[in-house]
Each structure stands twice: as C-alpha cells, then as structure tokens.
Image 1 (cartoon, one colour):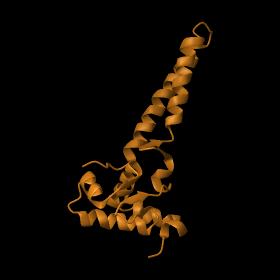
Image 2: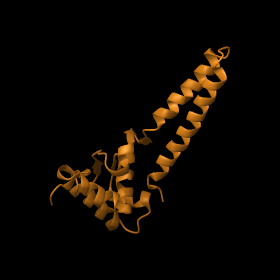
Image 3: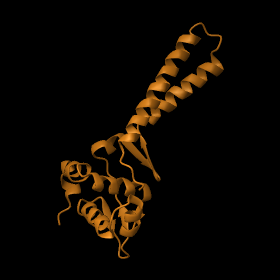
Image 4: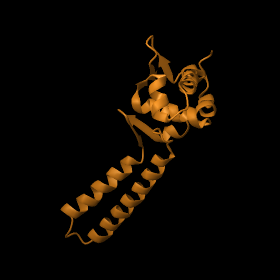
Length: 151
C-alpha cells in the first residue's frame, strides 16, 4: 500500500483524525512509543485484537507507525489536525498554551516577590493573574480535545 502520510498531509486528517478509534490508537502510540496489538487492545478496551491490529495497520500504511519483526509497533511522530497544537515530551502530550501558563505564573510570582512597593503593583499583578487563569482554562480545554486512551 502507498504511504499516504508522506505524500498527502490532508490524508492524515481524513484517515486518522476523522476516524475516532484510529486517532485514539495514534494518541495511545504517541504516549507509549511502542506496543503490540494485544497491549493496544487491552489499553483502549477494544473488543478484539483484530480490531487493534486493523487500526495499527492503517496507521502503518499512513506512515505513522512501523512494525518490527517481533510484532511490536513503533510510533513515528507527526503533527496534523489538532495535534498541531500539542508537542510530545516523552510520554506526555502537552498543549502549546502551557507556555502562557508558565509565563503568567512567573510574572505573577515576580510581581509578588520583587515589586510589592511599586505604584503599579496592583494593576500588574491583576493582569498577570487574569492571564494566568485564562491560559490555564485554555490549556485544559485543549487537553480535553485529545481522545481518551484508557478503557
């Protein structure tokens, strides 16, 4: 079969992100890095190993996983669809908005520690706290977009 993942980025959106269980499988593989079809079946709560193998083979045909000689599938990380708004750190899939959370948290702490006597302290602290709360809310909303990968 042809490797759609290499040639057509829109195919990834249609074939993976448009298919809930295939997308769940890819997110699971991003988190675990490697798994057999039996491990994937158990983790995702699929009714059969065949169903897990079907989704893994589909991901392999799209160039998103590679199967080794021992039957283990290994993920190939790619950003498409909503995954463009995330980055992968080890087994964590984290929204880009986490940087805003960190920025506003550092600002709020900095204003509390270094500028409590400054005439604009209250305004600066209020803006940083509002930014912190807003960025936390957006980060949680993005994280909830990811499909559940535990049964």
